[in-house]
Image 1 (cartoon, rainbow, N blue to C red):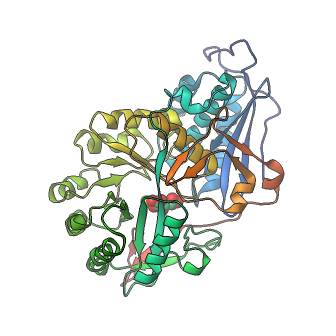
Image 2: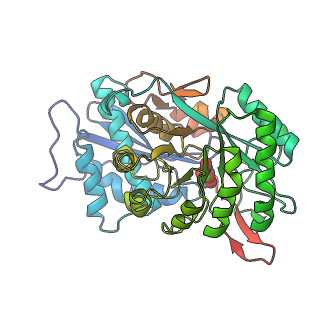
Length: 431
Ligand code: KDG
Ligand code: MG
């Protein structure tokens, strides 16, 4: 684990809100980089009274860029600020940099934002969701990731998830003629998981292949078989991972209608918001998008025109609780619900932040939840629970997550990359 704590506090500008009485000035901020099974970047802020708050700054495959952004450009600005001024700190970091938006900037701001919410809730002696308005539900419906290279393997993976307590399942499958597909576990015998680390820790990204026509022919039959085996009740989800054109996505959405999906995720590349108009006009399959979005502006057209049903942003990549709450409140006016991103590259700190938000907002939809590895759990001590398909963040003051420095010291950062795709003729494609 590598850390950074500035020793000389940087004086604040005269317009910065001064620390309120009670020792809430920020004394230090440390950037913790560790790799317990996979890489994580964590920000820990400490007040002059020794209260600590954690924020997740992990950007899968580009981790050190955020670590540097925080260490070199943000931490020096935090020293001496009032830890209570969450909104002002958010606006200060967003506007004063001049260079707005983007995954690195917004992940760094998110880490500060969540760490300050953690501190505020600890100082109040309350679980964070109480500061966000209190609980709007008893538990948070969560979905897990089942996958298989063929139907028997996929059915085993779904059964395994049901045994683990999942009551909503994402279904990903191999495609005949395509050698390796992102999101499909390479070895079901290892628990049917995919998460690309440690398997994909390497100096170069793994190359996979892709054929959209073969995929479009294959996937509807898989959902037909899953429905026949598991019945009509089980909520089923599917991730298209940005691989389709609008007309291809429209066709898939139509073909999947008989199987009543909870959602079809990232059917087209996310940058082009208008693309979803065409998809929407052709299918009633619910749509979800946004795991690679960073700000409300990425959702402007999509939300106003009601082109999707679920917002997929992570707290970690969207500027934190403060910013994601704003996006979700905007979405709520259009009957669009949350589906917060929660694979294992969101650290337990980022997950806890998502759970507190999920519990508090009115327009909650579903929460993605892939269990972290036992190594990750050694470094991040969590208090959230998972019972009968539902998560709860627990009632410890703050986020309810502690970082174990001693455990983290055993796991040095290791370069790791997400995979990428080439079509049969060698053209690079969305993966
Ligand atoms: O780091 C990339 C993963 O978080 C992402 O590919 C996972 O698509 C994903 C999902 O829906 O969880
Ligand atoms: Mg996804």
